[in-house]
Length: 337
Image (cartoon, rainbow, N blue to C red):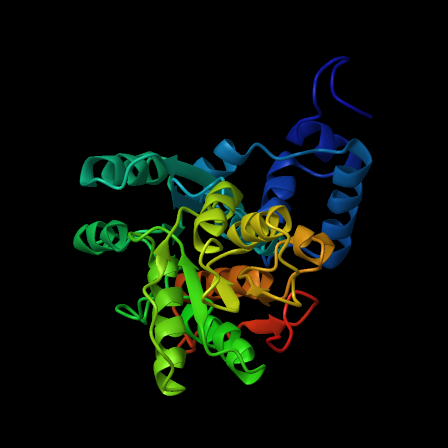
């Protein structure tokens, strides 16, 4: 049996096929413990046979639960890290029976942030994930006294109870130490934008490792994450060639720098070693394949959803230890000539 021709099946169609009342179907959909296993199996079989999809808005009204997790993303949707984190969050939310609602804000001023949050809260979200590049975004959010559980994907360490992140400083230190261990003493760092949390953390890790090795500190070059910037920065820096290695703040800028090396006839890694950050899927297919720092975004998503679900169930997860990144050595690094 199915609904009327041209119409999607409804709860009464399911009830008729399973031979139960529509109230029983509703109780099955809402995981009621009062339903017999045999009855539950009949209803679930009917749902599958009819390919029935419950009306989420109606369920929210009936149960006072939206089973929706909001994601606030601040002008970061075009970059690999935030988009991959969102994909991971959506996957683990879906596995837990939740859906996500994403709002991207184009500006990090207070009005835009509040507008984005109001939009999500109007959808009765049960919890919130904040993915934003600038510290001031998190400052505004903390001042708002949110009424729902929330977790922020940031690496400042200023609010460890609500934050989860890959350890950006540790990743930058791994990249820089790899170059130092190969014997490089003159190392440049091409950083991301100054107002990005990750760029600041990676720059700090680079400087920490350079100082620990008692090497000369060279002023980092402030970039914008793009291959275009890496290319033009490379053309300028390589006019002088007073360094033998580069740690780029992300893989795209590393790619641009490699392009500049090729154009100027500089061999990588024979004359110039390069390390990136993120391990985007294409990094293994650059030529030469790029040595980089891998971030475990799947684990970020899993832990974010796990922390929110625990809080929704009245449990506070204490493990907010930053996730360790991994050095992936490929073919763009070697001992200095």
